[in-house]
Image (tube, rainbow, N blue to C red; front, side, top):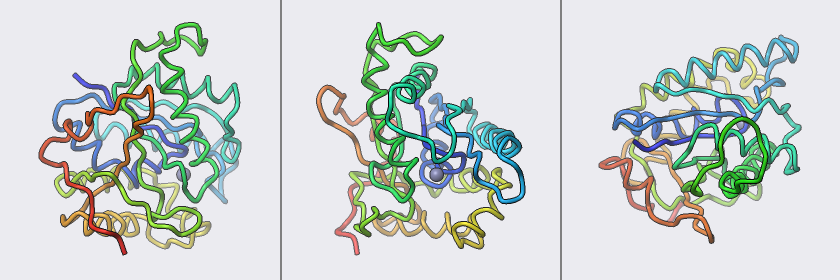
Length: 255
Ligand SMILES: [Zn+2]
């Protein structure tokens, strides 16, 4: 059985960008695990930091349970994610905890500094996880480097506005209701996203994005991925094969 770890910065990022694919993988009998590097502790204007962190971890765990996934939080603070020694060890421990064969993480270029920092940390953690003498915590080192994939950035664009073109897509029409329910589990975020991001309906925004990505691939709804293939990371198309009939080819030139 293959183990897939989805790891992103905040509770709800994975639900927006990759939960449909996790539903596909779970439905095919693979083991899915979910981690966030922060607890999303700054994501509220009504609750204090500690209460927000508790509420959002509970929401993330409830969302993960909808695909049978265990959830773990790295415990680094929102807007405090940096590519440093302590953070790399924390993130490497999460990769080891999962025992991941496949890792899905944040886009290297995205709107939020935590997203970009997590992308770097996870990239390097996949390498570090197999280094026996690199100390992280209680989980044993991996005997391999996981296959690494980047999810789309939020909205599909980098900070310069350039459109991100995925290597391939996953057709998520069959698992969209699970994806929607996973995002809906983040009840605390409806008010926050409306306030901070001027997005009045996060569920509708996610659906619009899923349909937009689907159009790129000629299907109703999709999620896009890019594979990190640089030496010594494995370059075989493992995720592409794991999703089976849900795999969709690279998009036409984007508009
Ligand atoms: Zn985020």
